[in-house]
Image 1 (cartoon, rainbow, N blue to C red):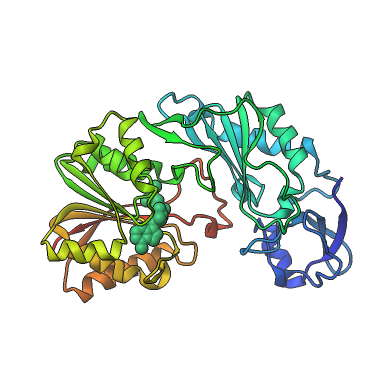
Image 2 (spheres, rainbow, N blue to C red):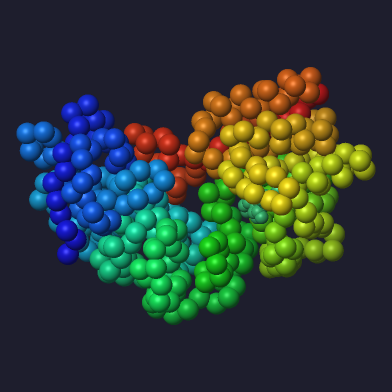
Length: 399
Ligand code: SAH
């Protein structure tokens, strides 16, 4: 049973929490002295001791914990987590009923009332991702709840926190049920993906780009040449090729991107020999493309929010304008730049401003065709728009 203590919340923060703000900020609590251990249940009270909300303590770079309930006598146990998981599953009912898509998110942290945890579904297998030691302390109750709420083939996990050696000898990703095949083939809008649930930090596909991939395949790719930068396992290239692009070029610095991208083409029966898969720094590739006078009809930009390579560091909030300028120079007139970022540090407004600056500095002209943020299964709270980190803009280069 988790330890439960009262902590006093500062007067000026009470209103935002009552209105539904889910993140426990360090500065909102009068004193953290009493709170020693992650996973402690916090009864947030006002200065007169009156109950306001129930939360838990877990350290993430975002904050010190998450709100769990507005009920004073709520017990944070398997029954509580079952309630949360069941309503999260209900919200994704249409996804479970759609045979063309067998990989999606079933619980999106605070968007589903459980900050610090996500659960993804991969064709009968469930993957839990823990973002703090605090939420991980509830593992046995959460597992019991997940097992009680789902028919599952197997359950896996990823730990995205530093456990400081505490769980060192625990066998990592596979938890229970049957082991998934390696690779496990899942579908997204009818397209295949090979995913690996037990092979490092990432499984091979970022589910939050589903609607963007479909849009590229169904509305933009036909007859076009496509450059996919920061391509990882080539997901955008696969969708472009299936949409009828004349050729895709995928560029990623990581050596593993070559076999991984090849595999994704193969599981979709696309002739890999007609595609280019290049292991290189994107910024080198831009130089090469300019030198060779290469121009593309579609350029996809999907960098990580922060990356360090041998030669440089890339920080989306500082360097995106330059990245766009590089892309603009190798995009055909009338072509499309798909500019994407998962950086939570800036808003869609700021991102739009980056786009405007990049074109202005090159004396160019553009038109915004469409915008995307997180898809429905990545549920976000109205009161916590910071949770909607994804920003994707389809830009037509006019000049
Ligand atoms: N667009 C991908 C996801 C990108 S993940 C998708 O849709 O699946 C970020 C990728 O950027 C990683 O694979 C990483 O290896 C790559 N990367 C980071 N810095 C890079 C650089 N300077 N040049 C090329 N690739 C880079």
